[in-house]
Length: 536
Image (cartoon, rainbow, N blue to C red; front, side, top):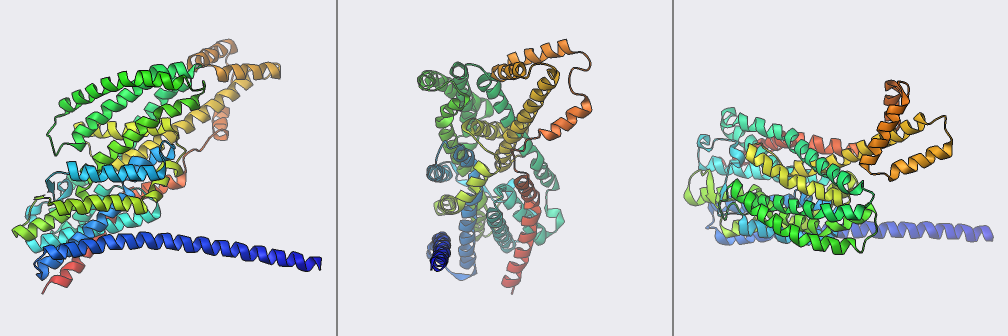
Protein backbone atom coordinates (compact mmCIF):
# COMPACT_ATOMS: atom_id res chain seq x y z
CA UNK A 1 0.00 0.00 0.00
CA UNK A 2 2.85 2.36 0.85
CA UNK A 3 4.45 1.73 -2.51
CA UNK A 4 1.16 2.56 -4.25
CA UNK A 5 0.95 5.87 -2.36
CA UNK A 6 4.57 6.68 -3.26
CA UNK A 7 3.93 5.90 -6.91
CA UNK A 8 0.79 8.03 -6.89
CA UNK A 9 2.65 10.95 -5.32
CA UNK A 10 5.43 10.63 -7.89
CA UNK A 11 2.93 10.54 -10.76
CA UNK A 12 1.12 13.51 -9.24
CA UNK A 13 4.40 15.42 -9.02
CA UNK A 14 5.19 14.66 -12.66
CA UNK A 15 1.71 15.77 -13.71
CA UNK A 16 2.09 19.00 -11.70
CA UNK A 17 5.50 19.67 -13.30
CA UNK A 18 4.06 19.09 -16.76
CA UNK A 19 1.16 21.44 -15.97
CA UNK A 20 3.57 24.15 -14.82
CA UNK A 21 5.68 23.71 -17.97
CA UNK A 22 2.54 23.91 -20.09
CA UNK A 23 1.43 27.10 -18.33
CA UNK A 24 4.87 28.65 -18.85
CA UNK A 25 4.78 27.74 -22.55
CA UNK A 26 1.27 29.17 -22.92
CA UNK A 27 2.30 32.40 -21.17
CA UNK A 28 5.35 32.68 -23.43
CA UNK A 29 3.17 32.21 -26.49
CA UNK A 30 0.75 34.82 -25.18
CA UNK A 31 3.58 37.31 -24.74
CA UNK A 32 4.90 36.61 -28.24
CA UNK A 33 1.40 36.87 -29.69
CA UNK A 34 0.87 40.21 -27.92
CA UNK A 35 4.16 41.61 -29.26
CA UNK A 36 3.46 40.39 -32.77
CA UNK A 37 -0.12 41.66 -32.66
CA UNK A 38 0.91 45.10 -31.44
CA UNK A 39 3.59 45.38 -34.14
CA UNK A 40 1.07 44.26 -36.77
CA UNK A 41 -1.48 46.85 -35.61
CA UNK A 42 1.21 49.55 -35.98
CA UNK A 43 2.04 48.44 -39.54
CA UNK A 44 -1.64 48.22 -40.49
CA UNK A 45 -2.20 51.68 -38.99
CA UNK A 46 0.60 53.06 -41.19
CA UNK A 47 -0.96 51.37 -44.20
CA UNK A 48 -4.42 52.86 -43.56
CA UNK A 49 -3.01 56.33 -42.83
CA UNK A 50 -0.92 56.33 -46.02
CA UNK A 51 -3.81 55.06 -48.14
CA UNK A 52 -5.87 58.07 -47.07
CA UNK A 53 -3.03 60.41 -48.14
CA UNK A 54 -2.53 58.92 -51.62
CA UNK A 55 -4.48 59.34 -54.85
CA UNK A 56 -4.24 55.67 -55.75
CA UNK A 57 -2.47 54.16 -58.73
CA UNK A 58 0.94 52.51 -58.81
CA UNK A 59 2.61 55.48 -57.11
CA UNK A 60 0.11 55.35 -54.27
CA UNK A 61 0.67 51.62 -53.80
CA UNK A 62 4.45 52.11 -53.78
CA UNK A 63 4.20 54.84 -51.14
CA UNK A 64 1.96 52.66 -48.95
CA UNK A 65 4.38 49.75 -49.23
CA UNK A 66 7.38 52.00 -48.56
CA UNK A 67 5.70 53.50 -45.47
CA UNK A 68 4.92 50.05 -44.08
CA UNK A 69 8.51 48.90 -44.64
CA UNK A 70 9.79 52.16 -43.08
CA UNK A 71 7.72 51.46 -39.96
CA UNK A 72 9.05 47.89 -39.88
CA UNK A 73 12.60 49.21 -40.21
CA UNK A 74 12.03 51.75 -37.41
CA UNK A 75 10.80 49.02 -35.07
CA UNK A 76 13.89 46.95 -35.81
CA UNK A 77 16.12 49.93 -35.05
CA UNK A 78 14.39 50.26 -31.70
CA UNK A 79 14.69 46.55 -30.99
CA UNK A 80 18.38 46.28 -31.89
CA UNK A 81 20.24 49.58 -31.80
CA UNK A 82 18.77 51.32 -28.75
CA UNK A 83 20.07 48.56 -26.45
CA UNK A 84 23.54 50.09 -26.72
CA UNK A 85 22.34 53.32 -25.08
CA UNK A 86 20.65 51.79 -22.04
CA UNK A 87 22.09 48.26 -21.80
CA UNK A 88 25.09 49.12 -19.57
CA UNK A 89 22.91 51.19 -17.21
CA UNK A 90 20.45 48.29 -16.89
CA UNK A 91 23.20 45.69 -16.51
CA UNK A 92 24.81 47.71 -13.71
CA UNK A 93 21.41 48.06 -11.94
CA UNK A 94 21.55 51.85 -12.12
CA UNK A 95 18.07 51.66 -13.59
CA UNK A 96 15.46 48.95 -14.03
CA UNK A 97 14.65 47.45 -17.40
CA UNK A 98 11.18 49.02 -17.38
CA UNK A 99 12.59 52.41 -16.40
CA UNK A 100 15.24 52.20 -19.13
CA UNK A 101 12.65 51.36 -21.77
CA UNK A 102 10.43 54.29 -20.71
CA UNK A 103 13.34 56.75 -20.66
CA UNK A 104 14.77 55.55 -23.96
CA UNK A 105 11.39 55.47 -25.71
CA UNK A 106 10.59 59.05 -24.66
CA UNK A 107 14.02 60.46 -25.50
CA UNK A 108 14.38 58.50 -28.76
CA UNK A 109 11.04 59.84 -29.96
CA UNK A 110 11.88 63.31 -28.66
CA UNK A 111 15.24 63.30 -30.41
CA UNK A 112 13.66 62.22 -33.68
CA UNK A 113 10.79 64.71 -33.60
CA UNK A 114 12.64 67.70 -32.09
CA UNK A 115 16.11 67.38 -33.59
CA UNK A 116 15.62 64.96 -36.48
CA UNK A 117 15.68 67.86 -38.95
CA UNK A 118 13.53 68.90 -41.89
CA UNK A 119 15.79 67.47 -44.61
CA UNK A 120 17.54 64.11 -44.83
CA UNK A 121 20.02 62.56 -47.21
CA UNK A 122 18.36 59.77 -49.17
CA UNK A 123 21.65 58.04 -50.06
CA UNK A 124 23.24 57.16 -46.72
CA UNK A 125 26.95 58.10 -46.47
CA UNK A 126 27.07 58.94 -50.20
CA UNK A 127 27.61 55.24 -50.85
CA UNK A 128 26.26 55.45 -54.42
CA UNK A 129 25.97 58.23 -57.00
CA UNK A 130 22.26 59.09 -57.48
CA UNK A 131 23.05 60.75 -60.82
CA UNK A 132 23.70 57.27 -62.26
CA UNK A 133 20.23 55.99 -61.32
CA UNK A 134 18.34 55.67 -64.59
CA UNK A 135 14.99 57.20 -63.65
CA UNK A 136 12.51 57.90 -60.92
CA UNK A 137 10.94 54.42 -60.94
CA UNK A 138 14.33 52.74 -60.64
CA UNK A 139 15.19 55.01 -57.70
CA UNK A 140 11.94 54.12 -55.91
CA UNK A 141 12.47 50.38 -56.41
CA UNK A 142 16.07 50.77 -55.22
CA UNK A 143 15.05 52.56 -52.02
CA UNK A 144 12.27 50.08 -51.21
CA UNK A 145 14.65 47.14 -51.72
CA UNK A 146 17.35 48.75 -49.57
CA UNK A 147 14.91 49.54 -46.76
CA UNK A 148 13.41 46.05 -46.75
CA UNK A 149 16.82 44.34 -46.83
CA UNK A 150 18.13 46.39 -43.90
CA UNK A 151 14.96 45.73 -41.88
CA UNK A 152 15.02 41.98 -42.52
CA UNK A 153 18.69 41.73 -41.55
CA UNK A 154 18.14 43.75 -38.36
CA UNK A 155 15.17 41.52 -37.49
CA UNK A 156 17.31 38.40 -37.92
CA UNK A 157 20.23 39.87 -35.93
CA UNK A 158 17.88 40.78 -33.07
CA UNK A 159 16.50 37.24 -32.95
CA UNK A 160 20.08 35.93 -32.85
CA UNK A 161 20.95 38.34 -30.01
CA UNK A 162 23.61 40.23 -32.00
CA UNK A 163 23.73 44.06 -31.69
CA UNK A 164 24.65 45.38 -35.15
CA UNK A 165 24.94 48.78 -36.79
CA UNK A 166 21.70 50.03 -38.33
CA UNK A 167 23.71 52.54 -40.37
CA UNK A 168 25.80 49.74 -41.87
CA UNK A 169 22.61 47.77 -42.53
CA UNK A 170 21.01 50.55 -44.60
CA UNK A 171 24.35 51.32 -46.29
CA UNK A 172 24.63 47.68 -47.34
CA UNK A 173 21.06 47.76 -48.59
CA UNK A 174 21.58 50.90 -50.69
CA UNK A 175 24.88 49.53 -52.00
CA UNK A 176 23.42 46.19 -53.09
CA UNK A 177 20.27 47.63 -54.65
CA UNK A 178 22.31 50.37 -56.35
CA UNK A 179 24.68 47.85 -57.93
CA UNK A 180 21.71 45.73 -59.04
CA UNK A 181 20.10 48.81 -60.61
CA UNK A 182 23.10 50.46 -62.31
CA UNK A 183 26.14 48.22 -62.13
CA UNK A 184 29.37 48.25 -60.09
CA UNK A 185 30.41 51.74 -61.17
CA UNK A 186 27.60 53.36 -59.17
CA UNK A 187 29.30 52.55 -55.85
CA UNK A 188 31.82 54.79 -54.12
CA UNK A 189 34.33 52.11 -53.17
CA UNK A 190 36.39 54.53 -51.09
CA UNK A 191 33.40 54.99 -48.81
CA UNK A 192 32.88 51.22 -48.73
CA UNK A 193 36.50 50.78 -47.65
CA UNK A 194 36.10 53.37 -44.89
CA UNK A 195 33.01 51.58 -43.62
CA UNK A 196 34.94 48.29 -43.60
CA UNK A 197 37.69 50.04 -41.62
CA UNK A 198 35.13 51.09 -39.00
CA UNK A 199 34.60 47.42 -38.13
CA UNK A 200 38.00 47.65 -36.44
CA UNK A 201 38.25 51.37 -35.59
CA UNK A 202 34.94 51.70 -33.72
CA UNK A 203 35.22 48.82 -31.22
CA UNK A 204 38.95 49.35 -30.74
CA UNK A 205 38.57 53.05 -29.88
CA UNK A 206 35.54 52.36 -27.70
CA UNK A 207 37.29 49.54 -25.87
CA UNK A 208 40.51 51.49 -25.27
CA UNK A 209 38.72 54.61 -23.97
CA UNK A 210 36.41 52.60 -21.70
CA UNK A 211 39.33 50.55 -20.34
CA UNK A 212 41.35 53.75 -19.83
CA UNK A 213 38.62 55.34 -17.72
CA UNK A 214 38.16 52.17 -15.68
CA UNK A 215 41.89 52.00 -14.99
CA UNK A 216 41.84 55.66 -13.94
CA UNK A 217 38.98 54.97 -11.50
CA UNK A 218 40.78 51.97 -10.05
CA UNK A 219 44.08 53.81 -9.60
CA UNK A 220 42.54 57.00 -8.20
CA UNK A 221 39.67 55.61 -6.11
CA UNK A 222 39.12 51.89 -5.57
CA UNK A 223 42.78 50.97 -4.99
CA UNK A 224 43.15 53.64 -2.28
CA UNK A 225 43.02 52.70 1.44
CA UNK A 226 40.50 55.49 2.13
CA UNK A 227 38.08 54.93 -0.74
CA UNK A 228 35.54 57.54 0.34
CA UNK A 229 38.09 60.36 0.62
CA UNK A 230 39.37 59.47 -2.82
CA UNK A 231 35.79 59.43 -4.12
CA UNK A 232 35.18 62.90 -2.66
CA UNK A 233 38.14 64.19 -4.66
CA UNK A 234 37.66 62.31 -7.92
CA UNK A 235 33.97 61.62 -8.51
CA UNK A 236 32.94 65.29 -8.97
CA UNK A 237 35.77 65.62 -11.48
CA UNK A 238 34.73 62.42 -13.31
CA UNK A 239 31.09 63.50 -13.49
CA UNK A 240 32.17 66.94 -14.74
CA UNK A 241 34.21 65.29 -17.51
CA UNK A 242 31.12 63.28 -18.37
CA UNK A 243 29.07 66.50 -18.49
CA UNK A 244 31.64 68.09 -20.81
CA UNK A 245 31.66 65.04 -23.10
CA UNK A 246 27.88 64.75 -23.27
CA UNK A 247 27.35 68.49 -23.58
CA UNK A 248 29.71 68.59 -26.56
CA UNK A 249 28.30 65.36 -27.99
CA UNK A 250 24.74 66.60 -27.75
CA UNK A 251 25.59 69.90 -29.41
CA UNK A 252 27.36 68.14 -32.28
CA UNK A 253 25.01 65.21 -32.77
CA UNK A 254 21.74 66.07 -31.05
CA UNK A 255 20.91 69.62 -32.12
CA UNK A 256 23.04 70.05 -35.23
CA UNK A 257 19.94 70.10 -37.45
CA UNK A 258 18.31 72.78 -35.32
CA UNK A 259 21.35 75.00 -34.79
CA UNK A 260 24.62 74.80 -36.73
CA UNK A 261 27.36 74.54 -34.09
CA UNK A 262 31.10 74.30 -34.76
CA UNK A 263 33.29 72.00 -32.70
CA UNK A 264 35.03 74.82 -30.74
CA UNK A 265 31.65 76.34 -29.84
CA UNK A 266 30.28 72.94 -28.81
CA UNK A 267 33.38 72.27 -26.70
CA UNK A 268 33.08 75.65 -24.92
CA UNK A 269 29.38 75.06 -24.20
CA UNK A 270 30.25 71.59 -22.91
CA UNK A 271 32.99 73.06 -20.70
CA UNK A 272 30.58 75.61 -19.21
CA UNK A 273 28.14 72.80 -18.40
CA UNK A 274 30.99 70.76 -16.89
CA UNK A 275 32.07 73.59 -14.56
CA UNK A 276 28.50 74.05 -13.32
CA UNK A 277 28.11 70.30 -12.78
CA UNK A 278 31.42 70.11 -10.89
CA UNK A 279 30.34 72.70 -8.31
CA UNK A 280 26.92 71.09 -7.98
CA UNK A 281 28.35 67.61 -7.52
CA UNK A 282 30.95 68.40 -4.85
CA UNK A 283 28.49 68.98 -1.98
CA UNK A 284 26.23 66.20 -3.27
CA UNK A 285 29.08 63.66 -3.23
CA UNK A 286 30.13 64.77 0.28
CA UNK A 287 26.60 64.18 1.57
CA UNK A 288 26.45 60.78 -0.11
CA UNK A 289 29.85 59.54 1.09
CA UNK A 290 29.01 60.58 4.69
CA UNK A 291 26.40 57.81 4.66
CA UNK A 292 28.52 55.11 3.00
CA UNK A 293 30.97 52.51 4.27
CA UNK A 294 34.63 52.73 3.32
CA UNK A 295 34.46 50.03 0.66
CA UNK A 296 34.95 50.19 -3.09
CA UNK A 297 31.46 48.79 -3.74
CA UNK A 298 30.03 51.89 -2.03
CA UNK A 299 31.47 54.11 -4.76
CA UNK A 300 29.14 52.48 -7.30
CA UNK A 301 26.14 54.28 -5.86
CA UNK A 302 27.72 57.65 -6.66
CA UNK A 303 27.42 56.97 -10.41
CA UNK A 304 23.70 56.12 -10.48
CA UNK A 305 22.34 59.58 -11.35
CA UNK A 306 25.01 60.31 -14.01
CA UNK A 307 24.21 56.97 -15.68
CA UNK A 308 20.50 57.78 -15.87
CA UNK A 309 21.31 61.12 -17.52
CA UNK A 310 23.74 59.40 -19.88
CA UNK A 311 21.11 56.86 -20.99
CA UNK A 312 18.62 59.66 -21.65
CA UNK A 313 21.07 61.87 -23.58
CA UNK A 314 22.45 58.99 -25.64
CA UNK A 315 18.88 58.04 -26.56
CA UNK A 316 18.04 61.62 -27.54
CA UNK A 317 21.13 61.91 -29.77
CA UNK A 318 20.46 58.46 -31.24
CA UNK A 319 16.87 59.39 -32.07
CA UNK A 320 18.00 62.62 -33.72
CA UNK A 321 20.60 60.85 -35.87
CA UNK A 322 19.58 57.27 -36.53
CA UNK A 323 15.92 57.91 -37.27
CA UNK A 324 17.26 58.89 -40.71
CA UNK A 325 18.08 55.21 -41.31
CA UNK A 326 14.36 54.49 -41.33
CA UNK A 327 12.88 57.69 -42.73
CA UNK A 328 15.66 58.66 -45.18
CA UNK A 329 14.72 56.15 -47.87
CA UNK A 330 11.01 56.68 -47.14
CA UNK A 331 11.39 60.46 -47.45
CA UNK A 332 13.31 59.93 -50.70
CA UNK A 333 10.52 57.78 -52.12
CA UNK A 334 7.90 60.32 -51.05
CA UNK A 335 9.92 63.14 -52.67
CA UNK A 336 10.40 61.15 -55.89
CA UNK A 337 6.66 60.47 -56.15
CA UNK A 338 5.70 64.09 -55.44
CA UNK A 339 8.42 65.77 -57.54
CA UNK A 340 8.87 63.10 -60.21
CA UNK A 341 12.66 62.91 -59.96
CA UNK A 342 15.65 61.47 -58.10
CA UNK A 343 16.72 63.51 -55.07
CA UNK A 344 19.97 63.20 -53.11
CA UNK A 345 18.24 65.12 -50.29
CA UNK A 346 14.56 65.12 -49.41
CA UNK A 347 12.29 67.03 -47.05
CA UNK A 348 10.80 65.03 -44.19
CA UNK A 349 7.05 65.46 -43.76
CA UNK A 350 5.84 65.27 -40.18
CA UNK A 351 3.98 62.01 -40.80
CA UNK A 352 7.18 60.38 -42.12
CA UNK A 353 9.15 61.49 -39.04
CA UNK A 354 6.31 60.25 -36.81
CA UNK A 355 6.52 56.81 -38.43
CA UNK A 356 10.21 56.69 -37.55
CA UNK A 357 9.85 58.07 -34.02
CA UNK A 358 6.90 55.91 -32.99
CA UNK A 359 8.37 52.85 -34.68
CA UNK A 360 11.69 53.13 -32.81
CA UNK A 361 9.93 53.55 -29.45
CA UNK A 362 7.51 50.70 -30.13
CA UNK A 363 10.25 48.34 -31.32
CA UNK A 364 12.26 49.10 -28.19
CA UNK A 365 9.30 48.42 -25.88
CA UNK A 366 8.26 45.19 -27.63
CA UNK A 367 11.55 43.56 -28.61
CA UNK A 368 14.32 45.66 -27.03
CA UNK A 369 14.76 43.72 -23.74
CA UNK A 370 16.55 40.82 -25.46
CA UNK A 371 19.41 42.98 -26.74
CA UNK A 372 19.43 45.15 -23.61
CA UNK A 373 20.18 42.01 -21.57
CA UNK A 374 22.84 40.90 -24.05
CA UNK A 375 24.72 44.21 -23.90
CA UNK A 376 24.09 44.82 -20.21
CA UNK A 377 24.75 41.47 -18.58
CA UNK A 378 25.54 38.59 -20.94
CA UNK A 379 28.89 39.74 -22.36
CA UNK A 380 30.54 40.54 -19.02
CA UNK A 381 29.47 41.58 -15.54
CA UNK A 382 28.93 45.32 -15.23
CA UNK A 383 28.72 47.57 -12.20
CA UNK A 384 27.97 51.30 -12.23
CA UNK A 385 31.65 52.35 -12.50
CA UNK A 386 32.13 50.13 -15.55
CA UNK A 387 28.87 51.36 -17.09
CA UNK A 388 30.10 54.95 -16.58
CA UNK A 389 33.28 54.10 -18.51
CA UNK A 390 31.26 52.64 -21.40
CA UNK A 391 29.05 55.74 -21.57
CA UNK A 392 32.16 57.93 -21.63
CA UNK A 393 33.63 55.84 -24.44
CA UNK A 394 30.42 56.22 -26.46
CA UNK A 395 30.48 60.02 -26.26
CA UNK A 396 34.22 60.71 -26.53
CA UNK A 397 34.84 58.28 -29.39
CA UNK A 398 32.13 59.88 -31.52
CA UNK A 399 33.52 63.36 -30.80
CA UNK A 400 37.11 62.40 -31.62
CA UNK A 401 36.17 60.39 -34.71
CA UNK A 402 33.93 63.12 -36.11
CA UNK A 403 36.76 65.65 -35.86
CA UNK A 404 39.28 63.28 -37.46
CA UNK A 405 36.87 62.23 -40.18
CA UNK A 406 36.98 58.59 -39.08
CA UNK A 407 33.94 56.41 -39.83
CA UNK A 408 32.60 54.94 -36.58
CA UNK A 409 29.48 53.11 -35.48
CA UNK A 410 27.81 53.95 -32.17
CA UNK A 411 26.81 50.29 -31.84
CA UNK A 412 30.37 49.07 -32.32
CA UNK A 413 31.70 51.70 -29.90
CA UNK A 414 29.31 50.77 -27.08
CA UNK A 415 29.81 47.03 -27.47
CA UNK A 416 33.56 47.57 -27.85
CA UNK A 417 33.45 49.50 -24.56
CA UNK A 418 31.77 46.55 -22.85
CA UNK A 419 34.47 44.21 -24.14
CA UNK A 420 37.17 46.72 -23.19
CA UNK A 421 36.23 46.87 -19.51
CA UNK A 422 35.80 43.09 -19.43
CA UNK A 423 39.23 42.38 -20.91
CA UNK A 424 40.90 44.94 -18.62
CA UNK A 425 39.39 43.20 -15.60
CA UNK A 426 40.64 39.86 -16.92
CA UNK A 427 44.17 41.23 -17.27
CA UNK A 428 44.17 42.86 -13.82
CA UNK A 429 42.84 39.77 -12.03
CA UNK A 430 45.23 37.40 -13.82
CA UNK A 431 48.19 39.71 -13.23
CA UNK A 432 47.28 40.10 -9.55
CA UNK A 433 47.09 36.33 -9.10
CA UNK A 434 50.57 35.99 -10.65
CA UNK A 435 51.93 38.66 -8.28
CA UNK A 436 50.61 36.78 -5.25
CA UNK A 437 52.24 33.58 -6.46
CA UNK A 438 55.49 35.46 -7.08
CA UNK A 439 55.43 36.65 -3.47
CA UNK A 440 54.74 33.14 -2.17
CA UNK A 441 57.57 31.77 -4.31
CA UNK A 442 59.96 34.45 -3.05
CA UNK A 443 59.15 33.61 0.60
CA UNK A 444 58.84 29.84 0.15
CA UNK A 445 61.46 29.12 2.84
CA UNK A 446 59.84 31.37 5.47
CA UNK A 447 57.17 30.82 8.11
CA UNK A 448 53.77 30.29 6.35
CA UNK A 449 51.99 32.53 8.88
CA UNK A 450 54.44 35.36 8.21
CA UNK A 451 53.93 34.90 4.47
CA UNK A 452 50.14 35.09 4.87
CA UNK A 453 50.48 38.20 7.02
CA UNK A 454 52.67 39.75 4.31
CA UNK A 455 50.08 38.86 1.67
CA UNK A 456 47.31 40.41 3.77
CA UNK A 457 49.38 43.58 4.12
CA UNK A 458 50.04 43.55 0.38
CA UNK A 459 46.34 43.18 -0.48
CA UNK A 460 45.37 46.03 1.87
CA UNK A 461 47.97 48.41 0.44
CA UNK A 462 47.20 50.91 -2.32
CA UNK A 463 48.82 50.76 -5.74
CA UNK A 464 51.83 52.91 -4.80
CA UNK A 465 52.54 50.88 -1.66
CA UNK A 466 52.19 47.63 -3.60
CA UNK A 467 54.73 48.85 -6.11
CA UNK A 468 57.18 49.75 -3.37
CA UNK A 469 56.80 46.31 -1.72
CA UNK A 470 57.46 44.58 -5.04
CA UNK A 471 60.52 46.74 -5.74
CA UNK A 472 61.93 45.92 -2.30
CA UNK A 473 61.55 42.20 -2.94
CA UNK A 474 63.22 42.54 -6.33
CA UNK A 475 66.15 44.42 -4.77
CA UNK A 476 66.58 41.84 -2.01
CA UNK A 477 66.29 38.75 -4.12
CA UNK A 478 69.05 38.17 -6.69
CA UNK A 479 68.91 36.67 -10.11
CA UNK A 480 67.03 33.59 -8.94
CA UNK A 481 64.54 35.40 -6.74
CA UNK A 482 61.30 34.72 -8.58
CA UNK A 483 59.91 32.44 -11.24
CA UNK A 484 61.76 32.13 -14.51
CA UNK A 485 60.29 33.23 -17.80
CA UNK A 486 59.03 29.78 -18.77
CA UNK A 487 57.46 29.13 -15.36
CA UNK A 488 55.86 32.59 -15.45
CA UNK A 489 54.18 31.78 -18.78
CA UNK A 490 52.86 28.55 -17.34
CA UNK A 491 51.62 30.38 -14.28
CA UNK A 492 49.87 32.89 -16.54
CA UNK A 493 47.94 30.04 -18.15
CA UNK A 494 47.01 28.64 -14.75
CA UNK A 495 45.70 31.99 -13.49
CA UNK A 496 44.03 33.11 -16.68
CA UNK A 497 40.60 34.47 -15.76
CA UNK A 498 37.83 34.68 -18.36
CA UNK A 499 35.36 37.42 -17.53
CA UNK A 500 34.23 37.98 -21.13
CA UNK A 501 32.14 35.34 -22.87
CA UNK A 502 34.08 34.37 -25.99
CA UNK A 503 31.13 32.74 -27.76
CA UNK A 504 29.18 36.02 -27.64
CA UNK A 505 32.28 37.93 -28.77
CA UNK A 506 32.62 35.69 -31.83
CA UNK A 507 28.90 35.85 -32.61
CA UNK A 508 28.80 39.65 -32.49
CA UNK A 509 32.05 40.05 -34.46
CA UNK A 510 30.74 37.72 -37.17
CA UNK A 511 27.47 39.67 -37.37
CA UNK A 512 29.40 42.95 -37.75
CA UNK A 513 31.52 41.60 -40.59
CA UNK A 514 28.61 40.20 -42.61
CA UNK A 515 26.19 43.12 -42.07
CA UNK A 516 27.12 45.16 -45.16
CA UNK A 517 27.60 42.25 -47.64
CA UNK A 518 24.53 40.34 -46.45
CA UNK A 519 22.29 43.43 -46.51
CA UNK A 520 23.65 44.20 -49.98
CA UNK A 521 22.88 40.68 -51.24
CA UNK A 522 19.35 40.79 -49.82
CA UNK A 523 18.74 44.23 -51.33
CA UNK A 524 19.88 43.09 -54.78
CA UNK A 525 17.51 40.12 -54.59
CA UNK A 526 14.60 42.30 -53.46
CA UNK A 527 15.34 44.86 -56.18
CA UNK A 528 15.14 42.26 -58.94
CA UNK A 529 11.93 40.84 -57.43
CA UNK A 530 10.28 44.30 -57.26
CA UNK A 531 11.52 45.21 -60.76
CA UNK A 532 10.21 41.94 -62.16
CA UNK A 533 6.78 42.49 -60.61
CA UNK A 534 6.40 46.11 -61.75
CA UNK A 535 7.87 46.08 -65.25
CA UNK A 536 5.15 45.85 -67.93
